[in-house]
Image (cartoon, rainbow, N blue to C red; front, side, top):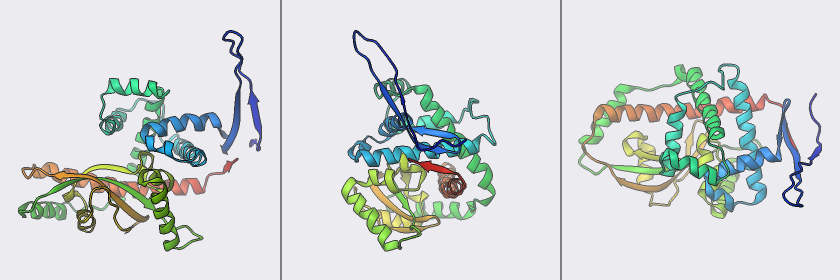
Length: 309
């Protein structure tokens, strides 16, 4: 039986001297028979703050909304994953996502455990979140692998042509916002809302709030990319940006893309062609899979009964 819009007050008594503490638990949403409480949202906020400390700059209402949507997304993904995997089984690929987190935070594993404790987060619980992310990526890969279109010959020719040029090559540290037109408003209105949000709360917080990309939880951070890995259209646009600037909107399969240039550095001209080719293929594969991931999740969400309070 579905739970109605109710308020449950649970009193937990803890006696420290003569003090008594109470905890109020409110139901914030339900997905089928799974409820989301304010405690779930508070825990998710701690995790999101850890990933992107700038989130604390937002209003409490916006933070709660982002955290609630994040919990909803995880529950929907978890329900789908249970059809294909034992989600409690250890997965070696989790280490790869953890390593990305370590690189992002510029810390070692031992430091990560201590940092999580300082932020009132449990390392094993974070590993569970990373496992969901890992399994989701694996599921998307299996479902859409046959739809990925990559021409290795064309890529290798592009790579060789680029490095025959004598001009300097760069690596770019990029962030993104991927947004889509809303059914009840046109592109210009949507774009204005995104730009106004960037002006008011910053690029990273807007990515958390409005971006539909999987990078949204990290404030839209993509990280370091060689210029030869990206399309000529995007490369030419990024080349014109100064550090801290944002590109014009770029039309992509699932909507529109805004790119922010966080930093750049000169790329070493002595390269391993085969290694760079593999990096290009990996980047393009991940880009296409990210698009399929967005489509897959949107379909699942549309077919899920969600009641928010």
